[in-house]
Figure 1 (cartoon, rainbow, N blue to C red):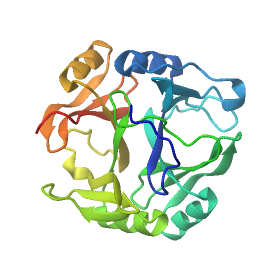
Figure 2: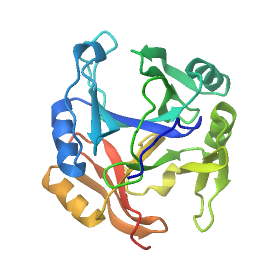
Figure 3: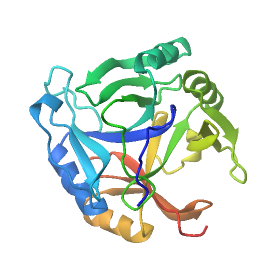
Figure 4: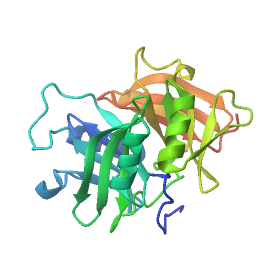
Length: 266
């Protein structure tokens, strides 16, 4: 089991969570699709649910709400958020602002678990920052049902590459045999990808720049079939590519994510 036993290097995607109108429906859907276990959390955490896989934290699911606990009106669209590790949330948020980004939610403590902020980069892609204390982030990765990859799809790859380099010390490098695709590396280790938003023909028109989480699966086609039976949407049907067999999907509340079987040959 690929368990995470130490802290994530700064700049590395370390967590992903989902904000939805109907939290219980999302918990039920991802339980059936990926085998996650989770329940609505206590009031002091705003009901935040930490979902687990094989006993390890794998992702979060929360109900959409305003900072004061009221229901938003209008309701924001359901969306996954990728969190990047940092040793200092506030310093990184300040750097993001200096480098053309915007702070959407300033640094705040989450009990004794850590400190977080939400940022948008200069191309309007939203992501989170996580400064770990008692909670490192995902405790299991790179196996079926867990996060295996995170990808920035952006309207301006050059501006995004510069921003993440100066803000989080992530190095963008063209990926061999993948035209227009760049890897993002932290301390010399590839941790994420970056590509032009226009490369994703399957997405609805006018979708903004965004981070896309990929979940590993044993069988891409059967997972897509299960999602369809549960009311989800298929944006890009299963197809083979250099890293395996993948698909781009929406859950029944229209949150977009990808799945991939990395053992499938392209």
